[in-house]
Image (cartoon, rainbow, N blue to C red; front, side, top):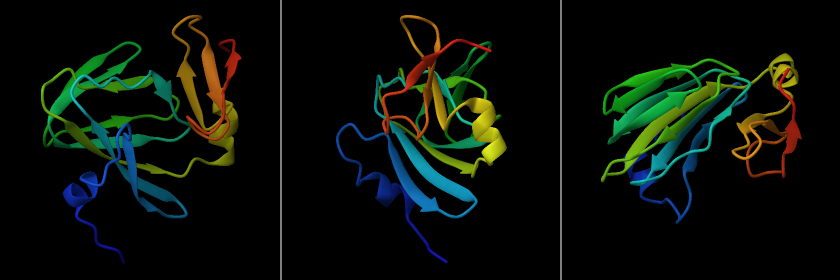
Length: 143
């Protein structure tokens, strides 16, 4: 077992860092996402289901066809392959506790990679084989 104080861990955030991994197990990952005031995450998806619990603050989780205002104490579930973005248009930081199961090989194959984003200029899907930031990504047409 391992016990962590999530809010103390959040204080270790480096400038520009949004995600801090808490636990990485064989089949489960748990992390926190820190959204400073005005921060917007690029529209993207993952090959596995995600849940986010709002620890502090409030913000917006936007999908391609829906938008939800989220605040402390609320939890949101995002199915695998569904595009979404998080943002904080408020004056206080928003901290989310996230978790996900490890994507299966079939899930990754269906997605074309570990993470996909939507290119703002072309509207096409950008495929990242190793997750955002690990490689440059490849533009792809929609299926």
